[in-house]
Structure formats: C-alpha cells, structure tokens
Amino acid sequence: MNRNAEKRRSQILRAAFQAVSDKGFDTVTLQNISDYAGVSKGVTNYYFNSKDEVFGNLFEWVTHRINGNEWTAVNNQKTSLEKLKAYVNAAFTSPEENRKFFRVYLDFLAQANHNPRFQEINDQFYENCWAIGREIVSLGQKEGIFSGIDIEEAAVSIRASIDGCLIQWLMRRQDELHDFYRKVCYQTIVGYLTSLD
Image (cartoon, rainbow, N blue to C red; front, side, top):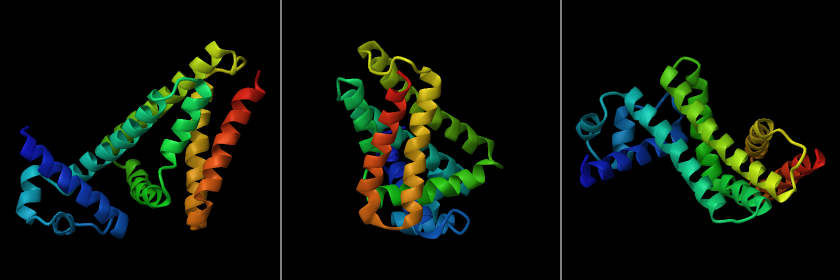
C-alpha cells in the first residue's frame, strides 16, 4: 500500500475512533465515519469493505498504538522500578485520552463475545501487555528486587491493576482524580511485587 493510501486509511480510522467515542459502537454508521473524516462515503468504502472491517481495523489500530506507546516508555528506562513507573505512566496518558480509549475499548469488549476477530485482537493486546510485565518482573528478579514471584502471575496482576484503576477512575467521572489513581496503581503494584520476597 502506498503512502497516500496508508495516510487515508489512518485518517478514516482516527475518524472512526472519534465517532465511536462520541456516539457509541452500536449507533455509528459508515456515513458518520465518513463525515468525521471529511470524506465521502464512497472513499470510506474504497478503503474498507464494511462497517465490521472498519471496526476490526480500528480495534487493532488502537490496541497496537497503546502497546507501542507503552513499550517505548518502558524501553527508555533502565531499572525494573523505572520501567514499571514508565509503564503505569504510559497507561495513564491523560484524562482526555484515557476517557476516549475506554469509551471505545469497552464498546469493543461488549462486541467481542460475538466477534471472533475482536476476541483475537483483544487476546493479542493482552499478550503484548503481559510481555511488558514479564520483562519488568524478569529484570526485577535479576536485580534482586522481585525475588519470590511467579513471572506469569505477576504480569497478569500488573495489567489487572492498571485496568482496574483506570476503570474505577473512569466510573468516578472526576478528572482531578486521574493522578491520584495513577499513584495508587503504581504503589499497589510495587507493594504486590515486593511483598512476596
């Protein structure tokens, strides 16, 4: 695919993300997505065969972007605790970004029970999240910080803490609590990882 086509597809996916965030998965139409992208419905249909194809690509695009940002943040640090803090900070991007992501993500999860492609994308998203956790815990074990812990269990627990804190923050609908939940999340994970020594 040439650069212009890739750019146009990205434009449509960004528009779909905003449309789903604003309107919800069930009510968004291809016409809505086209309107948000500032293109005709024919242009959207040229790049994507159906609404399902747009949404499958959107879900994949969003989760890859999240994972990519988190890996970049983690890889820029040296110690396990620095990497963990960077991971939590990357997950807690900003109130606005987290709210948009979870509006879209929770809608996709509701559809995933009936859509094998969405299930597969979500499974890959979590596998990537757990890989970050494994790297952090493995390094912490080498450093002698997280010595008495199962790496797989810890990787799952780290992501569960991140998602749980973000969802609880989201449900409280108070942007000013975003930083509080980020700190609680980091402290909870560190407490869990170091209490098993």
